[in-house]
Length: 109
Image: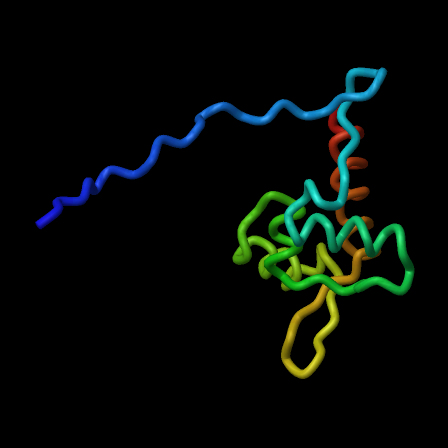
């Protein structure tokens, strides 16, 4: 009877080195982004792309949790629409919210 080793093969721990251009800055490709970031990028570039975001996608974009996004929507800080009980936020409304945050930060500085 043969006894098999239960150890997994060694995997490389080195991170791949990104290709950089002449400026030394790596261009971000849609394939480099996670699905939510890619959808947001496509919606800004292509007007026929998806233009309404789910609450969890908004939470990811603003680096927050879903409860915080629901709170912001309830207080009217982020405009939203309801479609058969589903809450959606337009890319434009999200852009307005972020611009408002930037304006508040500039005014406070």
